[in-house]
Image 1 (cartoon, rainbow, N blue to C red):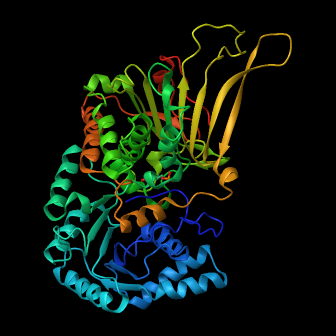
Image 2 (image 1 turned 30 degrees about the horizontal axis):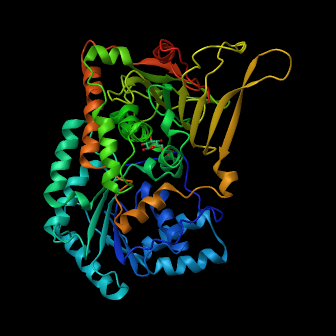
Image 3 (image 1 turned 30 degrees about the vertical axis):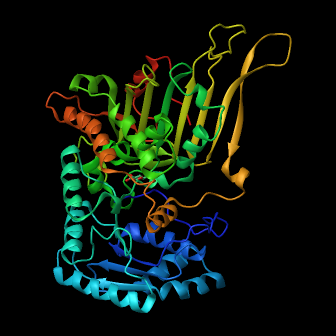
Length: 518
Ligand code: BG6
């Protein structure tokens, strides 16, 4: 299940999604309604959608979880969650309407009787709340329950694969979608026994981020970038997803079974790579975009264990300090095995075997307990063919870089050379900068709002398809397999609060590049 560092704020100034697309009436069933993701992300996102008038005129939200709650208890709980971040008279008015749409069905995920109770509740909501038989089932639960729930939904007649038009049923599946290629395939088989691919919405919340969607806008909505977007002009591409957080919120036990490669690279970073490297789609329909993304994943290298040693650095943090505060090492975190070899940092150098990208290195790095939270993509262009000007002091002249800041300080900047005023022909790097906050006056909407709305609208563009997930796992599994071998070197260490191990620097300097200090 997705966990993010910061709590959701319901900021009245935040940009509401434009009210141009309002979904058909429907009921949304939240499996795991009492859990962390529901409280931190999903319920605030639904409330914000209600507040912006983006939910259908007739809707209902049904919580399904093991706790023996009543409708009233669910309402009281969600009111507490939402009132923490917002308040005032406007809150009360929206809340009153929202609360009236909430219902709760207690049950365990493997109890057929509970699904029958759910069915009765949904049918009764169709009559009282006009939800028209349309359903969204959101699986905000631990991954071991995905197949069980889908199977029971099918058996209880809550999903009909042949009813795709109206009334429709759709299932949203949180990450992690499998632990390796084998388990992802097995899960896809289970899912496809009950659901048609057009009913499956696999979440990668990075795709809901406005700045991530803007990658395609920047590339294909302008004429100035795309002509230089290939091996002839681009020297290398760096993708960084840095996090300050460690194992906060009792995540150690889960994380120790996952690690950075599974938790961040297989999904979020592979998606960023796809958007930077894909060919232009014929249009922006879900399948046109996903077809192009799959081609990038299919062009990932096929590595043998030796290649993994050469091209991947895995590391674990030791005790250190972040922003002046002492923090423990990974092996001392609660829920983590003292002998753990789990990766909390990964750096990868890879090349894509395509016409556009042959020979261009892509460097990916992600880690917990790095000095700050920052996600960005830096595209470094080649130097001019001859050097007419005096080099900069650090010898870096001519290194043009386009940096897409995914978060925070969402925006983009282009670094280029300008002549320092005076009689010498010496250059200095200067920047053109675009900031979302300044350009659009309000911060972008939360990823989950956009994604929930798209599910209700039946738009799968920002959700991952079976072949996409499996192609990403094929590459990641080759790394995991190499790490499993007895002769595989153990993770190296880095001090919490540093930018990772020295070995990660060595990975990139051989190509005449260096990691950006953010
Ligand atoms: C989640 C990972 O998918 O993404 C977490 O499980 C990570 O470990 C989080 O912290 C990062 O999300 P964001 O939106 O804060 O960058």
